[in-house]
Length: 320
Image 1: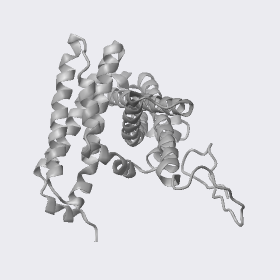
Image 2: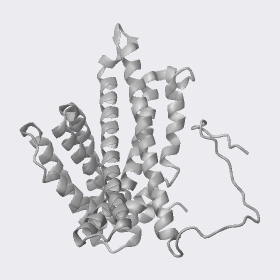
Image 3: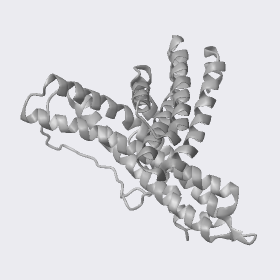
Image 4: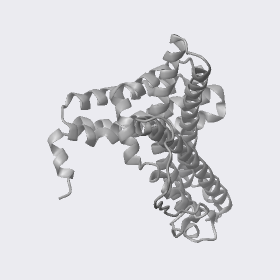
């Protein structure tokens, strides 16, 4: 039967059952899970990261249009600090998500180019090295783009309704549908929690820190130097948090702190990307500033939690 879903009703969902179906082997043996399934999952996750950016974009546009049009106490509600702060944060999250999506897609494109070249001829040692680098970076950014992007998508859909007030709860406005459609993005093709599982090894192996440091090596305009220095401080706090967690040889503690470390890596990477966007185009300057304020607060919060949390307290969170 066609499932009756909460959202994305334009995409029918049903269960497929095969009985006594003839089958043929596709691909090579012993490559199914390692190569084919993971390639399928990463491709789908990148697609959902793009879907999340699309929903975030429409949520922001709907909220912005309504805030400009809706009058309260003799003026448009966009003039109230509580509203324009929400809108600026929505825009910053949207731009950060899109920057991360494009960077991840760039890495995917690069290693796939080398895969295609390898079908025609043998890669040179330098090309093999670059191919592995791009493949590792794509593998690292895919769970970040899907995990962080989908969470921001849900937050923007939530804030879109909030700005609409009671009207947003009605089906007359698009934000009600957006809210339902957004919810699936952080669930299917691997929940946000599973994206953390996929991303944490790139925390422990230093892939994210290496990327952050490479971004910070770029020259920026004088007016962006303060942003760059603030990101550098964030990177140091993140690196220290990774070291602190790594010193504790307790798997349960490490798993418990994984989400915080991945989020710290994610917001720092996105801050770097927005800084570089602002270097190329000044229209990103405001989003870079607003997002950096948000990112610094997140990094500080998680670092404080890690620094003051005793490993044995993990048991307090276990539900019996």
